[in-house]
Length: 306
Image 1 (cartoon, rainbow, N blue to C red):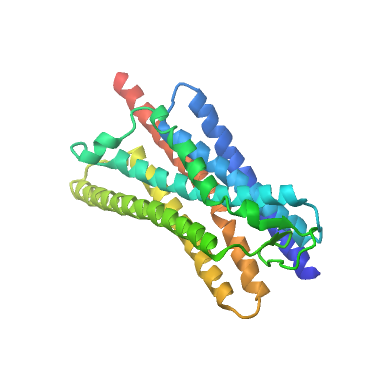
Image 2: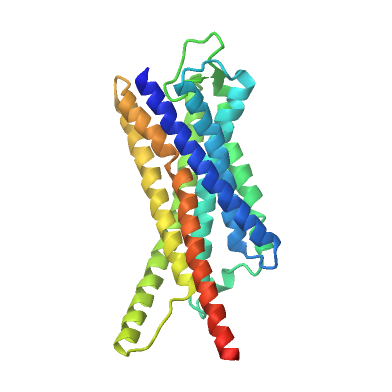
């Protein structure tokens, strides 16, 4: 009983904290995007925050209610919707995070690089990718509509991973097909994310060498906003990789156990919310750095005009 209360409190805290952070990121970048400065990076961050909010609402809140002992609070249709949207939102988060890293790498590419030609000229060039992400992840998770039922139904198969819903075993071939699609999606987008992150690391290394050269020459140098933004995006991707692979390792470990280990299972559930909770605060930290850089640039331009 006490452990359930502790678990529910942690879920409520993480869901609330993450929701506040993501709503702040969503609102602030929405205001910026509606203003005179319509950058594609703001559109990507709005979409990422929106996906995180959906994940926190449809993954964190039901688990909070279940941990506090509330049972049968979802009927069959609502159970399908909740589990399905949580799965789709997780996939959207993976795709959008990969897009953010790739766009950041293209933005930082050298002027004469062929990748520079791929840089979006307008935020509207990014927009068609978002419906594609939703359609892709909706199709990949469509099997849940048939295999998820409410715990109020008279069924004998109750999964530990969905204590407020039942998971009915599906056809083996169907399960393998959808599993293969999920693995392929993750491999493609994480491969793109890894390649883009590697290029960002290379650019940051070249920038560090340039700074050392200027310091030896005793030249006053101020890092451009793109460099600090790249550092924050790289930190965001490191957080994503940590939570993603920790979740994968624990999932494989749980499936390999003959008996259910509630401690490992609870840790995995908390880690599943980790990226959605932590990412908005990394982005907020990034915005503070950019604001400082923009103010510094405006001061420099002001003194130049004077």
